[in-house]
Length: 530
Image (cartoon, rainbow, N blue to C red; front, side, top):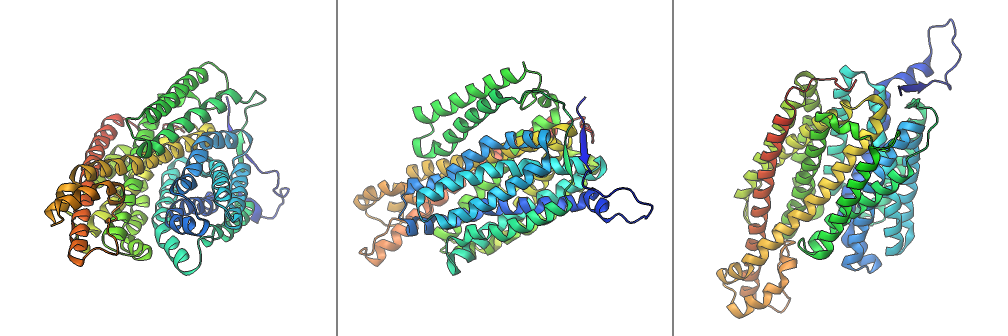
């Protein structure tokens, strides 16, 4: 039977003296948590600051909108295709080794982006970032799973989730400050000192952990099938809003990905040493946790995306001002993750996971009251509820997936969770933007004429629906002041119609997620995977 071993080969020989500082350092799980927190913070911060830097990248490098989409999409595709592979490599050959390789590669790729000087270079090195992020991310949880005893793993996951949520939420503030006061390259250069610090701490304190599996052939066909299937699914999702969700390109790409993934599952069930053991999905908590993880980040990234559009394009705040106004979300996440972990440790994920989804439902439904001039008093309560819900679910779902999996599969389970997170986040942004766009297209003409725009002018402005779906009013410098004000009012109201549709659908999905978690986790006890 495979087992997890800790490599102490670098430790000094036993001595009669009681003090063994190296042993204490290498065997201290909290130092392991500190080391992986730095790498996790770097990757999650990078993912959210790039969105702020994209407009400036476009201006500086004369990039098209399609080019800027690939700045994001190349990273997402490479990351999604490599996460489970990265976890498997860590499980078999050494989690410390591949975690540190991920840090080095991600840091060097970040610096290379800033030095590239061309949009093609930015896209290529963003893909490299994604590949190295796929080595780093799953092994953060794999290292924690191997280092912490069952009774403390939940709290470790809570702190892990807190770092993840807070770094994601801080991204718009950090990115806005760097872009406004330094340059767009600094958004990537900031990873250099973080990466060096993460590498030094990891080299000093991380123990090596791997599975003692003996010699067997690595599952190369599984790697190819999984990467191809995930690439197709994620590509279809991220391009769905551009191509049209009902288009042959979108449906064909997603269908091809699902078919390849089905073949992958069939193949994995028939080999002795699979890349992703299908037996893991017989663990009910792991399966439910994977679905809820995807839904959790569908909500978080999708809602943050249109909230930033609302704050910046409708309300006129700068990126930094908008980021500051979402600080309640960050602070709530800071509290919710360890709280969710403590509650999960005591009562199991069946309490915290549905509770977190209900808090997110409350947050999104309360956004139905927002309008084009809402006071901040109506904004911060849903931010707090959303932060509490996301942090609580992230802690509970991490415990349900990685905590319920056998220790020998800790890296693979971490990769599975991270893959669900990425697919859910990509779906959230794409689907909610599509909902907003559809509602804007249906109501823009009526809102413009209702605001006082002449019918003929309003009909011409309906072609600017894509801009309005981003919260941008289609005004021109030569417009009379009265007409300009009417166009801004009508466009903003059409955008809010789209937001209300998006939050209504999101709230319903959160309620369904709460029901799924409560029903699916019935009878699940703590520590089943230990």
